Image (cartoon, rainbow, N blue to C red; front, side):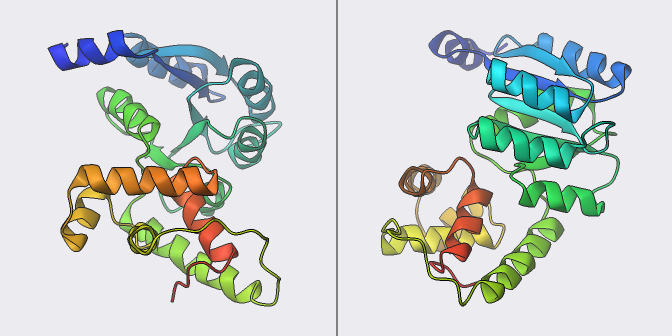
Length: 232
């Protein structure tokens, strides 16, 4: 553990993680990998979506690792339930393929991104830290598909009166939101706008605060729905 990692652990509470998968072996593997990290704490495990929603409501995890396909209640419905009761929880979908339509639906429902089940187990802690810090785990192909869906959503809701009042974003915040909607990460946005990555992070944080949302993807969905942003 580096000195910077130790100071981070001492300065803040551990990241609270809920693991949701109907295969016990997968849950155990994830739990063991995360338990070895001093800045991460596994607070619960669930074997289906219904149990996951109940545990999330009680334990209020920072991050949930969520299997897509499970008995009783699948990962999509569980994602909707958790985002409704504990909106601050960031949800990472666990999937065997990034082409699954279910995965796309889960991200639309509020998931922050996904991990393939063949990922190196040592990469899981970094993914948990990333989404906890506000990053999205979505590849460019998935981002393009989401943007297309948001455009369709915008057209379908063109006749719906906007909900008032709509929070006012600055011109620079709107620029950042448009680039987020294109699937750009902070580094790419900083390069595009000739500003620092820290400035981009501050803009994203301000956007989420103003819209009272918890993830970049939620901000894009909201902006399209309220006609603050047109995606073509």
